[in-house]
Length: 354
Ligand SMILES: [Zn+2]
Ligand SMILES: [Zn+2]
Image (tube, rainbow, N blue to C red; front, side, top):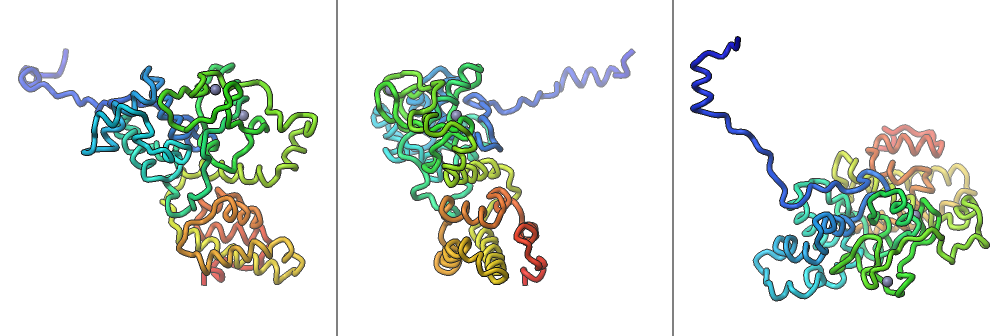
């Protein structure tokens, strides 16, 4: 027998408990691919994939759902009937949309509003706005690895475009060790990151499949037939790709929002370490002199300006024998300890902080 007495039953009938229904998203709660790894999906790829999931073109999704949120009161249907460049502007429809533009922020806000997801800013570099220099960091047109596309298709995995491919300095696929393509092999056209009818893995102009089993000709096996040799040959390129991948992977894992002054303080301690190393052994000046000079200029003349990722942060970390992820994620004290140990410096963290 139930313990519920008659009065309670009466209450339940007269005052039924209102069921709490979670808020529904207007668009699918589509999970972005690879967040927290170097293979994180790009914002433009997510937008295109979301359109595909809803069986509409990116243009229809943008004009119907996103534009009213981005443009707000200036929403004019006749202007929106043209193409997506009207919304994003010619330069913002390029891979830089995955970077740190104002339009990037608007697009992230609109997509988070429509999908109710809260992790979409990590598909761009918005976290680093004002901290890392944007100029020259992103490509003008899409680039892709034909072997990644082909492999994902054969393995029935989702086809997408990693954020890594938006960076100008990423010329090779770290998985397949082949050069990225930026022109369709069928019609020789280049593609913007966001186009009216893009479909991931296909040329936005001639609609041909862009995947292939074969490495690009410029890295043919006649020249370099071994992965280790290839990595030696393109050492600085691989160093940059690894560094950029680490930046992408570590961003969602950071406990505190990074600040420029925080990173400058860390660069100061690295400069101090380099000075110690050179004072101990003058021959080290050959290896460290140039980067020390660059660091000194940054710390004295450009201390309030965003930092160059590829030409400063990545090589500095390499010389300091730390990963970019360590540089970005470790706090000042922990990083100092790692540096003293890696560079064999007989110094305590407390001395350095003074
Ligand atoms: Zn690949
Ligand atoms: Zn084509």
